[in-house]
Length: 267
Picture 1: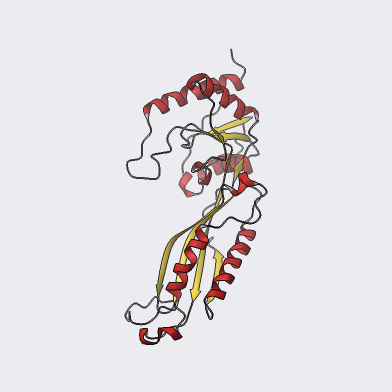
Picture 2: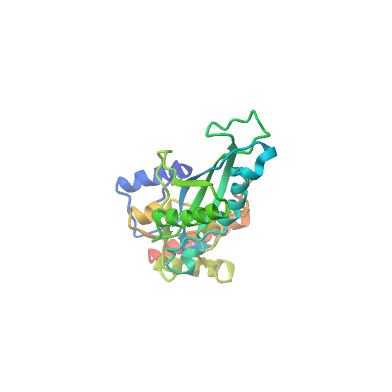
């Protein structure tokens, strides 16, 4: 049994990636990211994108002659939010596809001049994040973005659009992860959960955890290992006053111990 306590999970999993590249291997793994004790058998890969819209400015008195980049951006956001990428091999993979716009900035020119509010804005830059499943690609995601932007351009004649993947942060990316629902590690975890809680364990590409990147991606993609994501906490994470319910924490310890005894064939 190997326990790893690594740094940099929020920086692309640099700690786990370094451990894997230095030779860390195991027959199976359990990644303890918060899942509310559910067995997560698939989660998405994450990428960042930048979209730019270029319109045409006019004074508000002549805005009918303008191409308003801000209004076009407002039109665009719901279509991005509803996106599912077209290369999902099955509904499970499609269920962890998601696009989210995190920032929008619009004004006059690429310098975002804000000194003349009566002018129609002719430039908008939007940034956001996308999620895709195993076997799906950023290349296809870009093509799907392009289709949405082409349709936007048809609704806003004269609007110019551009989209690109943002890879400037220099951090490694969390790859996607999956494991068969009937894999040995999953069924052992299911059995331990049933013994501790007296009910079947929820298992599968469950969201919201399925939208999260975890170090399981590196263990799976770079280390070639089979495993599952399951940990206490979840409903209170990524929000103020993060915490874990004590009963969940204690039950998780019991489930881990029983799973390890099962896998290692200890009586």
